[in-house]
Image (cartoon, rainbow, N blue to C red; front, side):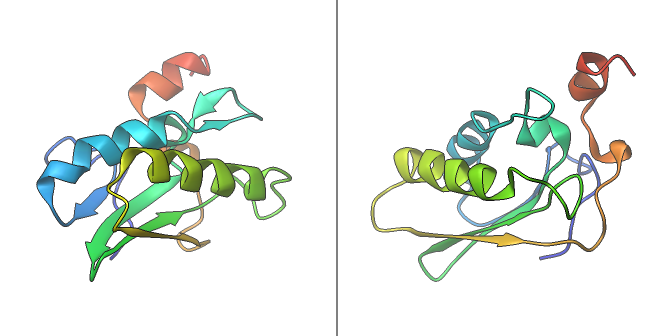
Amino acid sequence: MTPAAPQDADGAAFAFEGDAALRQPIEDALRRVVDPEVALNIVDVGLVYGVAIRDGTVEVRLTMTSAACPVADLIIEEAERELDRALPGDLAIRIELVWDPPWSPERMSERGKRFMGW
């Protein structure tokens, strides 16, 4: 799965592969995860690079705004918890923290940019 632009051609906030019926519950779950440093959900911040559902596992690729992010573990734990609450129990969840490509403000949604006053 390759990282998506801030919005895919279909207007999605991140790349998605798998059962289309699970796309919205996954996005909703990830939107409930807030980056406490910016008080905005991780989808609008642009931290979610992509989601793929393969072989009974939901694979989520996340990044942080910097490699020195002091709340990375907290964000990952909250994402796992929200996904676990939203998805069928037979799906495993795997979150991969990635650094390539590095996060940049261009990844933020228009909503996120407005929230930040940009």
